[in-house]
Image 1: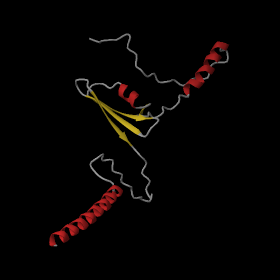
Image 2: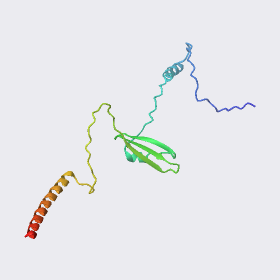
Image 3: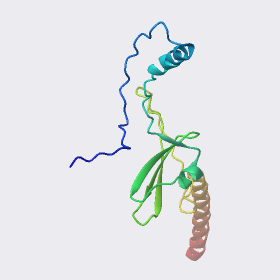
Image 4: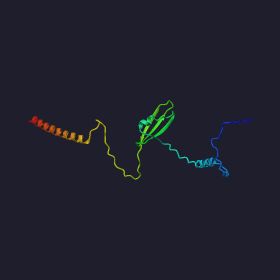
Length: 154
């Protein structure tokens, strides 16, 4: 048995080359021929850009992602990449990465370390001031103990 699908049409029809029309063709036929000529020159498809650009962290958080998928989002205004994932239950999570340019032959500079440790540590200036106060107290103590020892001896 031969099955025939009357509404099936292939998605691609090869273009037939246009033959020279006979001299007795009417003006409408000439107009059709002129309109078909530019349509034969189809533009070449441009390569797709797979980067998804967002405008900040708020837009990255609101970007929809299907369950069990991960999407990389690039910030247009800052040097930040957002990696947004959604697990099977539909719960999203996002990692935020900052990127910077690495210059190949740039001179390396020593970084100045600043400690923001709160009350756990004392600066060198404060320690030096405390050390001077201690030495002054130690000198007074030694002079008082020398006077007291002289009194006991007499």
